[in-house]
Image 1 (cartoon, rainbow, N blue to C red):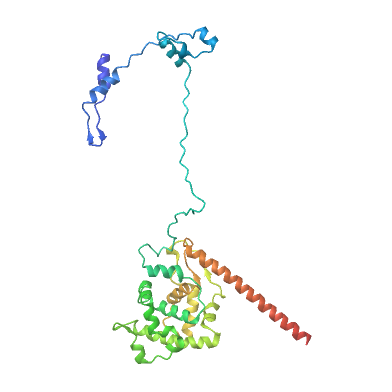
Image 2 (cartoon, one colour; image 1 turned 120 degrees about the horizontal axis):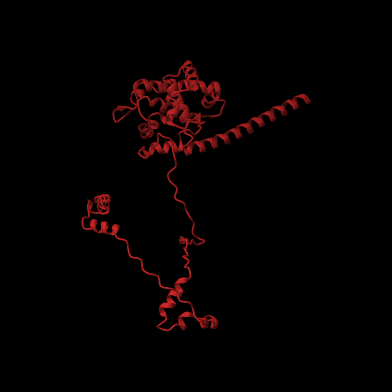
Length: 329
């Protein structure tokens, strides 16, 4: 086989090129590329470099000024003898000028919340998560309200309950236990919204019964708040859950509280209801550790711990002083 045939066989067929107009073969350019690959550009003979005249060097005169028109070619070749240095300038970004009276504000994204709060969540529910859920509560009326709303979770969702919250407060006399305990049968059956009962009859009767039992707890423990917080030594339980699937629906502590409430005559207070109540009342901090509210609630808990320690120290000092006074007498 001749060399020409070998070269022809070694040349590949023109391949398709993906251009702006689609995957087409450019036929007109294919033969040209073949010929360009076979032909090598002829090398130009280098001209001999002429030396610079001695007179020019001695007199320290520029080459361009001493060269005549006949020697212009030799002068240009003399210039090309010296190696050229390519200087690369680093690209500099334009500086931003900020005046003294202007403030540089970094664009911050939305705060990261718990997994169950999404961009599509109800704004009322999101606000409830950011401001109330997980914040420790010590007011008896507010605790009773949260207990009733936690019981309503068996029939309604949190967004539905929050939208009806004003109606709950109106029909239940702003969740005053002493007032609710006096509800009669007629008053109980009239708790409706647009002709529809606010809750099932079982739940409504449980609210009235729990209000009566709460008054007894207040007499025994001084307040319903002292009773609830005594189960956790008056300090919130801090769970450090990273994912929503780790958050339980009940806990051993909720089961203990549930059993004690049932013994005292409370109704519809199962472990699931009580754990929801503990979450919303801040008795347990179940915000995910990735949620911005976890740190805020944790900081408030630390302040509360310092306050309790200070109160305990003052009580101990008062007792010691009273004992010293008694000994001197």
